[in-house]
Amino acid sequence: MSRGATNALITRYFNQQSLRIRVVLTQVPLTISTAVIVGIAAVFRPDALEDPLFQIGLWCQGVLLLACVLIPWGRLPRPSFLVIAYLDFVAVGFCREGSTNSLSGVGLLALFPVFWLAASGVARRISIISGTLATLLMVWVPLFLAPGPPTTEQLGRPLILPMMMLAFAITVAVMIARMDAQREQLEEKDLALREALAASHDRERLLDAIVNTIGVGLVAVDAAGHDILMNRKQRLFHRLAAPKDNADPAEADLLIFAADRCTKLTPAERPVARAIQGEIFSQVLVWAGQGNEARALSASARPIPGADGAAAGSVVAFYDVTELVTALTVKDDFVSNISHELRTPLTSILGYLGLALDDPTVLPKEVFQYLRVAERNADRLLTLVTDLLSTASRTMAIKPRLTNLAEIIEDSLDSAGPPAAENGVILLNHGREPLYATLDVGRIGQVLDNLISNAIKYSPNGGTVTVRTSTTNDSVICDVADQGIGMDKEEQSAAFDRFFRAGPALSRAIPGVGLGLLITKTIVENHNGTMHLRSEPGVGTTIGFTIPLHALTEQNTPSATGEAIQVPR
Image (cartoon, rainbow, N blue to C red; front, side, top):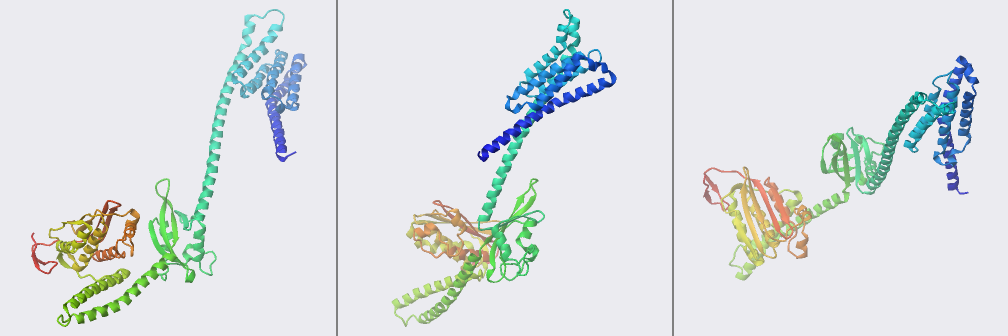
């Protein structure tokens, strides 16, 4: 026999035994109550025990109890055990009839079979009616079996007992129905909770698999700073930051350093401690560990919202950016070194070109013009190398003076005329009104040259490039708008990165090295200003800057050309 078949037999056996025990337990209260009545009769009315009908009732109850024990009710149809309840009415009827003259209240033993029928849950209405009829027959049958026909008074006198049984049966049936309904609701809720618990376990296993699969260190802490979750990657970072002589370090013992890789962070300055205090931050660079095994980690923290809206903790993510930091360092070193190497020969070239051009009469006119072109381009190349060094170190020499921004815009637009005509671009100047600010004329001119040049280059199909200026209480705003190819969101986020070139620029072979906007941003920031950019692919780009503006009263101020200009009130 298979194991499954054996288990099925065992289960069926226990179900049968369980039903038999329930049937016996249902009969036992009636048997006990009858035994109590017999004990009372033996003490106070021993003559009642001598009545044959009372004895028949006792024997009937004994036989019924034995039947409850011996009959395999589990093998019979389920409602078959109710026959015991109906036979109990017969046993109670004999006991009642045999003790009418000596014991009162014996008929109330009918409560037990009535309860049994009403609580069985099998055809409740029929059980209520049949229990009431059985009680009625129990009190009427002896009247019909007596000599002579029963009178109306005789038939009506015992009706109180059946009516009591009817009320009792209805009450029990209603209570059992409500209990069954509540039980069904509880079972449904229990099933729903079990399903929710199973789904929760499934989600927990899925989350555990996800957080241990991703290459990001994750740690979740509660409001008290206790770890709720730490994934495999974060445990690796934890081991890297552990001192060699401490196998199980606390957070304060970990070797965590600042971005310079030398300054050890205090416990309060570390990302997890800051997150516990409720801080929200992104891309905080720290170093974990020492020596060649140290890793550069970019930390970001976000709070865990609680049910009451307050933070219930925080989640901190650690990204391993060691390779990126190393690559950026190598790139900065390369740019700095190559720029230094280029400056020396360029300075020498410009020096000798200057000597050659000191006396125009010595050289043929045509050669003199060639050397002037060479000098101009060498000077431009030296400026580019100098700017490259400046952007690498984020420093730049600024020589501010009070000047008219409108004249700088006019000069830049004049210089951009030929390339604009070649590209079929129309230049519009909406910044002609005098606008005075303290700035570096050459550098801001370089900013406008870069912005206007880019607007023309990225308008290969023509269109309009518009320069606009406006002011706030303490700042001047200058925008350059084109109707060119535009940029998507990803390209906009990287527009000011070094050597960045947008995809359309590469596909259309638009010239450039990707330094113009970075140099522009560096110049504007050295003026304590900010850059802004709006763009939409296929529609165009608007890019501009905001720098501090110092308003003047009527006085003579130098212009961009150095001439005196009367500024109106």
